[in-house]
Length: 167
Picture (cartoon, helix red, strand yellow):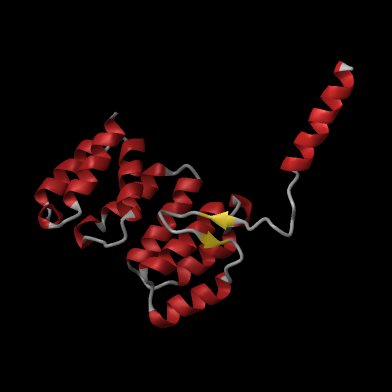
């Protein structure tokens, strides 16, 4: 009797939680944006190269990089190498450095863009993470207090990230 109930409960459990391939939509969630995993990365990169990187395209490519297995990263490294020097190139390199566990390189790639007052808020999250991972939160805080960013609206946000990282 108990065995039959257990079998019935297990059968019900597996029928309820069995994935249905037609109904599953694989979603990625970079930052605060949810995008479909079926984005066409080639056209995203081509469009960004032609018209420039927007916060949305950076977010989409970031989601792609974060979820790409490290062993499949080489074509993306080659693509990033081909980008013009600038914020996007360094930001994408920093994401790869994080995946590789190279937090010093990640911090160095991001820190140089602190004074640019980027409107892409995940930049500050990644910067604070890398500063925390390399024990450079004090350096980051000192730089913030002496930079033009101190007059910008992102200063309280970055300070709260630093405070949170210290907790």
